[in-house]
Length: 226
Image 1: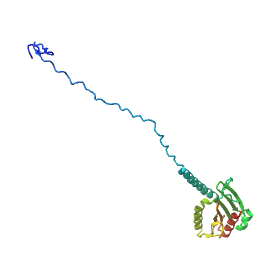
Image 2 (image 1 turned 120 degrees about the vertical axis):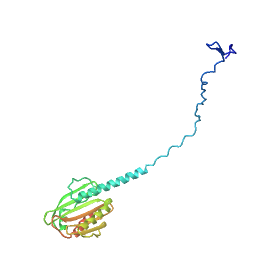
Image 3 (image 1 turned 30 degrees about the horizontal axis):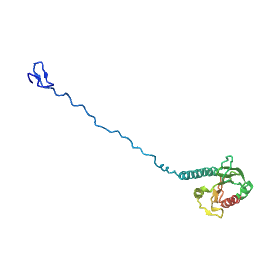
Image 4 (image 1 turned 135 degrees about the vertical axis):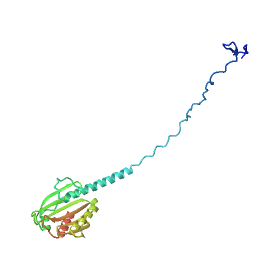
């Protein structure tokens, strides 16, 4: 401080004295650093990129075939079971149509009068059902035909049915893989060729009928010959 100003910026206070210039108030203004703007580099036209590889649909085709086969097998099993119980469903075109032997021919072969109940077909299976005229002592006959595709499973079922009669099946010279058995309540024969599987069952209408394996085999031969 001084009684007189000592230079520019000196200022006089209320007490009459002079004071040196005041320092600047606050920090200097903030200077923002320079940030360059990114400019993407431009390139001239180049060669066309290679096209993406084409996906093969072979797997889809194989899957569709497998599904189709499984569906056909499932339908075949269902149709086979349908005719083994002698269903009288109205007929439609079949892939393995069976020509039903006449009532007289079947009656002669099994040794008991029968009547044809149904000779029907549904797409992949067909069947002929014969009922005995004498429900007390006579025999019934079931002939079932289906695609050879289901042969393995049906042969297993055939052997299981033989076991229920306490007998075992034996080979027969009919078709391919021909087998037959004879029991007190049921006798049956089965064989397959290139396109179809056929089974003949001769079973009791009520009382035991004894071994009718010969009749089952004769009817199986008749169907394969037709």
